[in-house]
Length: 131
Image (cartoon, rainbow, N blue to C red; front, top):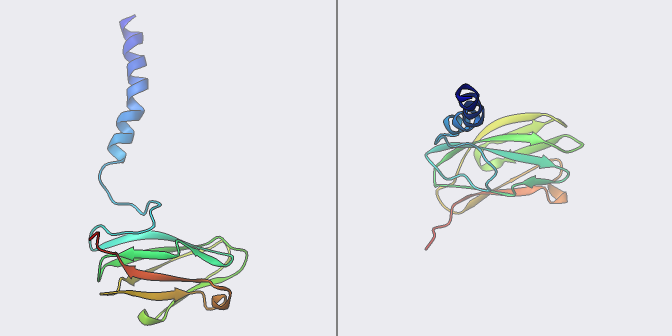
């Protein structure tokens, strides 16, 4: 009986221990609308028909953010950030990675050069102070 109880306990606790070990303190891209921890981070940016999600990417002044561009739309899209010389096409169903730098103050606009006139724009901006 004791062996069966010990086996049951291992089956129940093992997944929890593995999950706790795997989930420890690293900063991931997650689903939040802004990324602010550390001096460098990564974030997913969805390109769809005809919008970006999230529309605003926030971070600390001067912070580098690696954006994973995922085209979930039915046509080719683009990520252009003229202020930083970035012009990246992403085919339907494909992904690409770029690195942007949060401006020292305010915000800069990014857009899809193919669908800008349809409102496919967004902003990279410095996080607001809580005060």
